[in-house]
Image (cartoon, rainbow, N blue to C red):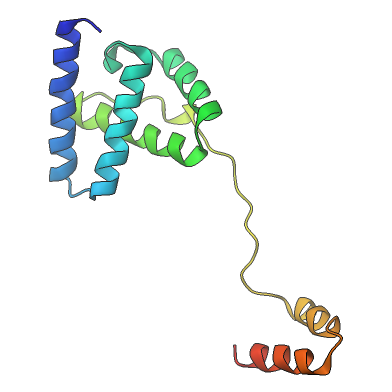
Length: 137
């Protein structure tokens, strides 16, 4: 970035920090969102508002390789906030990054699973322990 662009970005960055604080965002959110905007500015070496959707696709494609999906999501949210509140532009690139669906295991065992667990226990005292523990909830 040249000096004029750097000064403009620094002004926008200070506005971002102030706006995040005035919106009542937590310190962690402020840190995460601002880090995402800084990371983009360092990566592209130009003003973020001059980017096209294709530039952002390339940036996020590189980010997915080097960072976790949670970082990618937070960076996208930070850039969306920056576009909406600082640049006063519509964020049209929401569909660029969609993290994969994560399938989680259920926290509660079914009755059949509990039966198998207790039935697989060889020693009586461990079986009694599991039955008592399960009956206590």
